[in-house]
Length: 114
Length: 116
Image 1 (cartoon, rainbow over the protein chains, first blue to last red):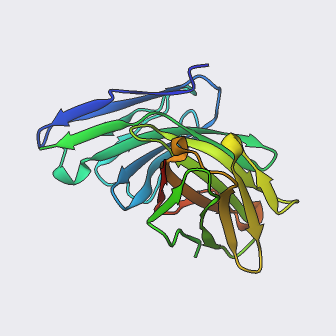
Image 2 (cartoon, rainbow over the protein chains, first blue to last red; image 1 turned 60 degrees about the vertical axis):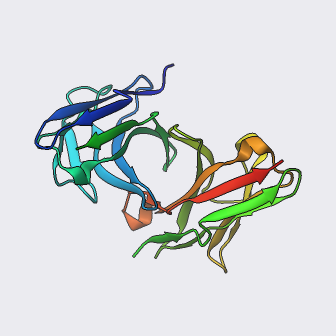
């Protein structure tokens, strides 16, 4: 299994541009997540999905959109990039062992908005 | 409200010495507790978790963690540190299903530096 994959690894955007961060997993996990990681701020949940066709907002959803048309893919869309969106973005998927969930992370996408 | 605290931004330890990375939590119900490690320029990797049962949980790479309900702590430990253990460590908590809140709450991370 490749696990959780993310593309691109690094991107520079100009203010107002748009882009899509790709995330895919091959573990047949139902749950998927997008986080952003800022220095000294830990992880903040942007959006999550409990299955294909179902998404919900996390702590910091403003400025982002997601879709989940398949179990495998969970892209994150930035419509109008702002400097405040400069961050490292991590996608994760999870499985349940009984009632307990364990998350597995992709390698991250580093985004710089200038 | 649920919360996680990692009181130390950075921990320094000499190679071969025992290490402890601290984590305390607050939940209204029973906790599910997790430790993840992040190596430079990499994603987070799962280390171990506490669900129920034995308070001492063993995980990957020789790490273990001790759940202490009275102190609401879940400190990460290793008997003998390696230079390769140098990384950023995150503690996370979630209430048990009775709390009906599925989201993980993450600590801010502790940077561990193991000196040769």
